[in-house]
Length: 553
Image (tube, rainbow, N blue to C red; front, side, top):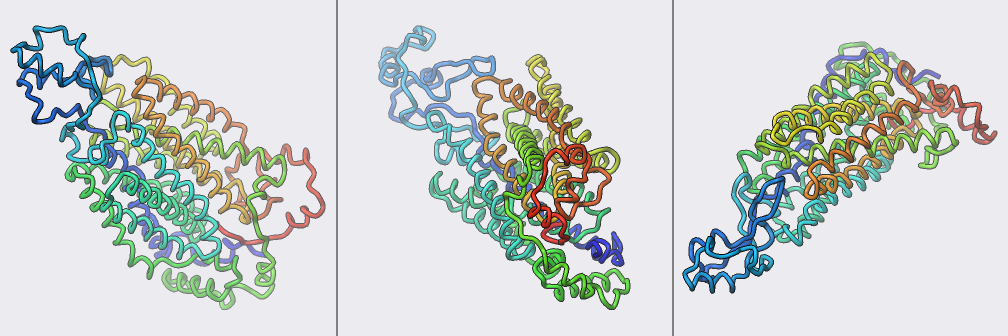
């Protein structure tokens, strides 16, 4: 029986139909760049200090000296969470004493009983200043971002299952609607709890949209375009959305208005419903050959090429109907495959920790927060280009391992940079993110090439779930910077270098056709040398010999 790519070879690789699908699906990723990193500004932490009520009866001198000093970042600064006892200060002020006349270190202190005053630069208002997520409640800030990524994790879990059952196109636009609709509802949040629950649901829609768009494009586009779409297409358009985020945030510094501005572009995706087709591969996997053939014939007409009189002959139709059903346990069906799956999950998780920790930590870098965020987003463009070039020319595992070594090594080097060399520190952080982003961009392609058609969508979904566990952890890596400036970078760098070493022990898929069955999967270099180590039972062997065109690619 012919492979699906052989069946549609008459369409060509890069006709008007493919170009339209490529750019429209890539453009649908732009709102993901907004929402994925919006917490950088929505949950930005402005400078703050204890508020002194108007009736405190303090002189101007004591109002300015009402808070003790504390060491932060190697400098003595005004405390954010403590103040001197107002009763004691009122007595000193009434006696006509000035701050210079007393030993302020001996004065009694108290927490911020009357709330806080917040600086209006660089943020006019954020959810932190809205609901006082500081001091004893500062743990809610990383939790807000983590719960968004919990939603991303849940979305990763259900998106593959839903798109397998209801179709790629329907779930793509449904999740776009979830992302846009619930982002709009967040504007009207009346409490941190309400905002966070809605943020979790937005996270579910955000990743589902991303994954399904990736799968849909990979299934529709041909072999040569698939890698370009998976790297340059998806990643660069995500980076475009990411770059637009600090631009919007620079001009709109109130969190509610910023959220409104970031939500509206999602509405522009609605007309795409009438342009983007369903995946013919998915239709075939469901036995809906007539619908698949209609889409293929429309593509041929758009490309200006003649379609054969019979696209699927009766023999192929009968063979395709005897397709396999996949389960998550198929990713662990032999010890050999199980080891590869576990190593892949760890690779995705650690790479995700590095990527999101570096992205979310931009407000902690020296310099302008908006410029740093823009540079962090801009770094992703050359990273995606390098990833594409590496995928075209070099083996997968060496490319991924090399970029992880680059990123992790540079991040580890940060602790040796003197504190006064701010520009060098920011440059090294961006170079480290460049390496990690390049590796991250290659993981989708690499994972999709390792697994056969029957479980490819499930494998990518499981790997994506693993990366979301890393993204849930990432905000707490950033949070550790409050205790030690270099601790997050030491942890990120060490883990990234370690997973770079483990990557070298994975199989090599470069130059191999996409496997259709588990038997073909075991032919991949790295599997071949060990495939005879384990015996597959006769009942399972029967399954391994059957062809199918199930799910993606």
